[in-house]
Length: 122
Image (tube, rainbow, N blue to C red; front, side, top):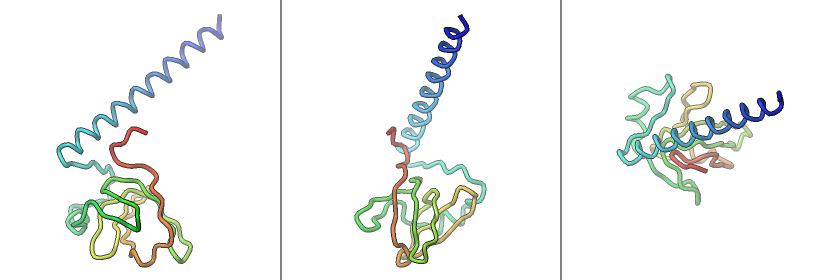
C-alpha cells in the first residue's frame, strides 16, 4: 500500500516538473518572437546591454545568440561558464552563474562549448 502511494506521488512530481519545464520553454519562445531575451541576473545592467551591440554572432563554426549558455576555456586554461549577453569588437560579454559580468577577448579563447540554446526544448 505504501509503495503504491509513493509511486503515485513520484509520478505526479515527475509530471509537474516536466510540465513546468515545457511552460518555461514556451515562455522563452514567446519572448523570442517579440525579440526579447530574459536574463535574470542582478549584475547585468543596461550599460552592459548597450555595450553588447551584437546579439547573434559566430565564433569559429559555432553560432551563438544572446541568452545562450556556454562554457569557455581560455588559452591560459581558465574555464568560465555562463549566459551570453552579446558581443562587441572581438569580445564576448558573459554573465557567470555567480553574477559576475566578464568581457572575454575572442583571441584568448581556446575552446568554446555550447551548453544550451535560449528557447530550445531539448
